[in-house]
Length: 285
Image 1 (cartoon, rainbow, N blue to C red):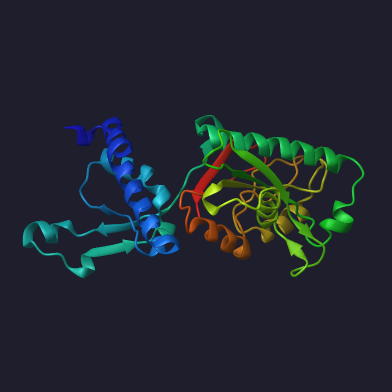
Image 2 (image 1 turned 180 degrees about the vertical axis):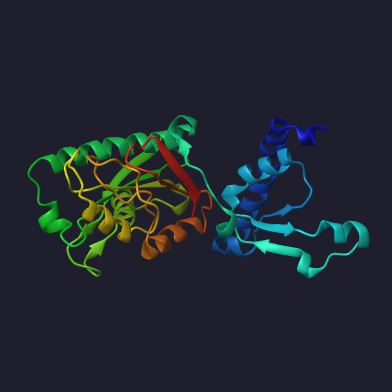
């Protein structure tokens, strides 16, 4: 009977399934190190499970980036007791995934701490932009698109995590540029060269603007910004500034983050749907 009740399914996944999956994943990491991802894969079969069970599985296993097996001709299996290859469709996580944003109030304490630090960083940056500065003429003179990053690290012997700030620097493109993600990782290592990859907990990425808050944005600028985006544009009214949120790590930064995730698969990337910082997207590398 419990298979039809959503709350019981969530309890089962949280208390039974997830701990076993995480224990198994960590055992593979301990055994083979950075090759763990070649030996660990989660699949969800979209067959005739109850809606409550399928919803709980899909929501809870999202962080493992599962593949989905869609058996769309169940009658063949039921009546003929055979499974044809043409009856089974395999969908990748990227194809099926439609991850919703999460309200800050619903986040765990560490992620809330990172978001709070990002808000402070954003406020400090806005104050800088409002006064005299050389960001546009020197440090961001190529793209004029500032990106802020906050990195959280925590050693096993530390009670509280440490937070580091970084931003992109673009004296010239592409060789004279440094993204915010790589900048903040370098800052953390410069402060503590003994950090292990396992000590990195999560990284937040947030797009800003060099315009003063409240500066009206022309239709031409909105179209120009929209063309530069790889993801959907902020839904901001005229009078708000245009940023590029949510913004994902570039190819070079992804290589750095994947290097961390090789031995630390729980490392998370936090991005923001818009400039309000009231909701976030959280995913693993």
